[in-house]
Image (cartoon, rainbow, N blue to C red; front, side):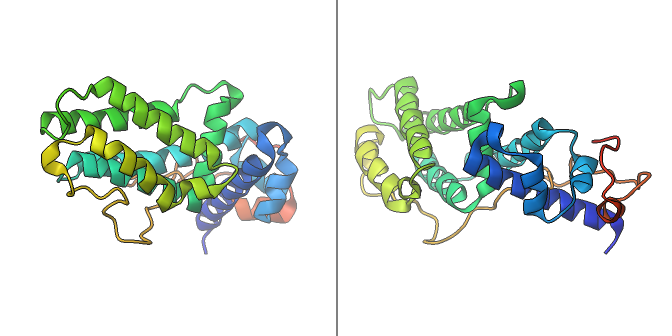
Length: 251
């Protein structure tokens, strides 16, 4: 394994360890010592990749944002009924939240607005919901008289509430919970010709898992890992782990 490969793996392990700490303890109580220990590396290895706790938190949030954006883009770019795609996207996000601690921690950090960052992950979700409902309206999939903005607001309130409740009890993120939600909403918003054609449990195969977060920071379209040098620096990650050197010039 090359030094660059070790650096990428160490960064991934640090981001996942940080996500576990942020989810369990919150941003303020999580410590860099616990994060490095959870990743099985020295504090020097952590400081090679991240200047401080805020930088680690930002990396967690970045990885969560990419995973959520990937699901949203897939839903908006697919063919078929827009309302069904909206139902499917909500189920995919819920499964992702159950399976991926990085996504859960990223949303929590974003909601707490730690370190003064300005990214709004829920704004991206609002845009996804609004665009799919707007497409459904253009395609005649909404019932007559159903107001787009109010419908969007109801879906956002319900799905955000389920995400927040799911932090304490993942049963809220289970398929039956979202299925119940859509069984109530779809008869109110869907055009009559779609009655019986929409599946509130989602059209994805049972048990299928969405693509998770990429803590290495790659964009869904590909590319080099964000925040990792592609050229060797004065010391590689493996060297830092062996020497325990801390406080080097950081990413």
